[in-house]
Amino acid sequence: MRKLIVLVILFITSIQLAPGQGLYSPGSPQDDGRLAASTKQVNQFFRRFNGEESADGTRRYYDTDELYRNRELRGKFINILFDNETSSIQSALKNEFLNDVLSETLPKYINFHNGEWFAEVETTFIFKGKKEAATLFMKLQPEGLGYEWVVDKVSFKPFENIFRKPKGNEKPFLHPLSHEIGFMNLRKAFQENNKPESYTPKEYEPDYLTVFLYEMKNGNLKFDNISDVKFHFFQINNWYFELNQFNRPGFNTGWLISNLVKLGTGDKEVIQKYIYDQK
Image (cartoon, rainbow, N blue to C red; front, top):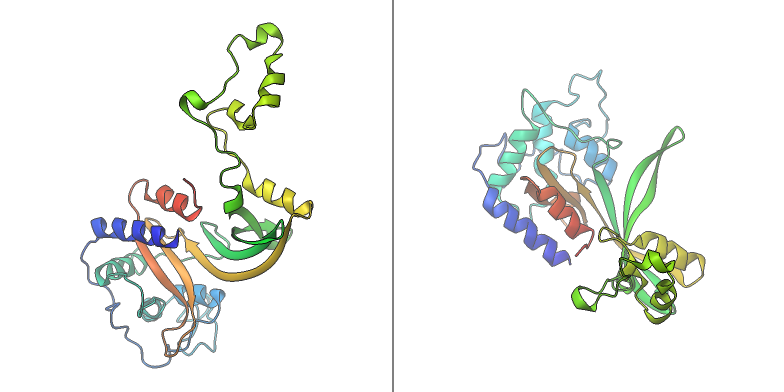
């Protein structure tokens, strides 16, 4: 699935690349040495992207500080917020992104509480005695005087086919005159057919999260472990980027942008479907 997402992203970027001159060349980040420290926390990624942290990382800037959201500081920071070692993001695309978010007339920022970003958490659960992979999609929601992370969607392979409707001539149906016999044919439909979803509307979409929670409450599903976490951002208009954590020697480590896509009409929905593992 991960390879499929990458292929879709590469396809979209290959047909939408536009040459541009960025504030700095993304292929060779201009760093005076103080920016080299790893971006260790996701919250720090927000601050650096927005230019709300000092170059040495020791001080947080607020709107009363002279260098708060300084354009030159942001340009240096954003350059080192890319995975510059292993990603296939092209320099022209990075430049175009930089020109957009660092615009002198309409700069763009990311906001922790503004939605349009979510976490993808790779986990394992024990389902009926067998270890199974499960992907949880988490989002922030307001709660009381603050916010909380909640599970918004789940992708779980054992559930993939349990609600898959038959199609065409294989699909059983209730006769349009069923009402004239008081829907007595429901007895036969539900007793002889193991696909009750056949009798639901075309637009019916199963709620796998509810099934997941139901199995957990019944003791059939037990949490095991977390193997990976990453984040998907759609906050910047006309852009999507993926944030991953890189643990490796050198300066280009921590939470970094690993995928970048300029979005055209309908691209956001296409990428989201792949992320959520929808068919």
